[in-house]
Image (spheres, rainbow, N blue to C red):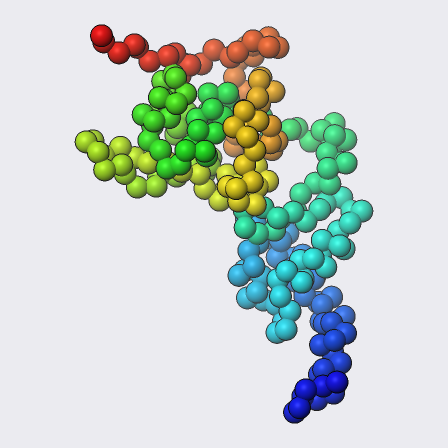
Length: 229
């Protein structure tokens, strides 16, 4: 029964859900935005173009349902939505699409330490890792947009604090940092990160890859010298 002063037609529309034509238009808008955006589409981005009376969650749920059985799926990552290849098709695509090369193990170790201990300094990364961290490794993570400065530690020398970025979440398919796997799962053996999809932005593959099961030799794997007694 409609509330006092509320038209019967409006009450019926509310009970029956959004107008199908209006929802259909909104779903098409959302699909176009996700396709065109270079980063995950946030609720705020979507809300700016949606018709009145429709929420981002409602529209994206309809879009996700529409994508079922298609070649792409709508995935929640980094506080928004993005299209990803349907998991059951990924293996077939590797025959014609070159899989992105994973980060070197040293970089993955540094990245995982930053992710779990942020904000942290380079010295703290080296202390946790038990090995020196080459400046080139940190610069590579910075260039890829996976880490960013997070201020300075208020100690002598005021070293830079490092933390992960929204692109880190997007690259690893995480909604938030709370979705991180266990530390030992983030970096596995020579198979690389447990979470796939980390590319190295056009880097050439390193010469002479190590044999299977053999740890790669890198200039930043050298342990720091022992402290003087």
